[in-house]
Amino acid sequence: MRLLPPLVLLCVFVVACSQQIESGEINPTLTHSFEPLTIDSGEEVSGVCQSWTLDNDDTLYVAKIRQRNEGAWHHSNWFFVPEDTYPGPDGTWDCDERDFHDVSAALAGGAFFAQSTQTVEELQTFQEGAVLEIPPRYKIVGGVHLVNATATALDTALSFDIETIPEQSVRVRLRPIAFTNTALDIEPQAESRFGMTCDLEVSSDYNIYYVLAHYHEWGNYFRLSFVDDDGGERTIFELRNSIGDPLGITLDPPINSRDASKLRVECGYINDTDEPLTYGLSGNEMCVFLAYSHADLKIGATSGTNTAMGPNESGVYMNETACGAVLAVPVP
Image (cartoon, rainbow, N blue to C red; front, side, top):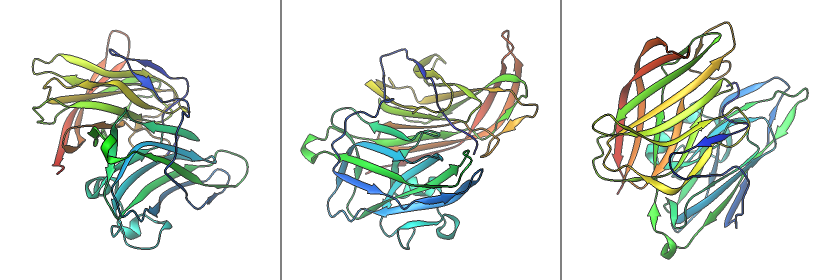
């Protein structure tokens, strides 16, 4: 990839929110450092996975996760899955050899942590009593992406500190929601926005507790909103930023859907190159978010066909992407 989310972050919410930019306090119950990866100057590493078997005989109720790394970690997505998933020794391995994919990992277990682009430390924390529930005999597995922009080779490792709470303190069990818009065709030498609205067919009220936005170095805008039956939009959060800072947002208080069955995501970009940008890793862009709700569903959505609407009155090239596949998997 090139460089994903964050630097100076301006978070504009319709309701109050707290942003997890500082490292914050954490009393770790579990800690783990993965083996260092060696990356040459100017090298990019992708298609690499790492795993850590928890050896937990009891359910873990995870309230906070702190990630730290020693540089060049462009982005990484982490999941908790049964320990017999992706069989083989822990450590570092080729993702393709064990048929690892983000979607299959999320369905096998759940989303554990998503690293904001190029952050060396960040904290994913939930409201009091809200947790990720990790069943017994699970492991943590992640697909990692590194880019070494320095003049020298690096040996760099990533580590996690995890704070758990006792079951009697649990109030809410969180489930993931993730959208990906791959239908990007971003105008050169221009500002563009891409919107996508998906009907989740979830009729009951649910709260969204945490959101992480994800795009690359040309990204300058993100908005997530509920869409009511009459077409009205209610912003969950809206931000403008450049790369370098964490983009994980703890919504305090959580935001209720009020029976809205649709979610809309909008990503904006300033493409200062002479070529169009499309969805991809190095030299291209992304429009992705991860959220956690207390609906008893794991929810994912991908894009369909994009329609270019042309520039608006401000000269911003507007695009509307049809929602493609929507997957909503009940969680017992």
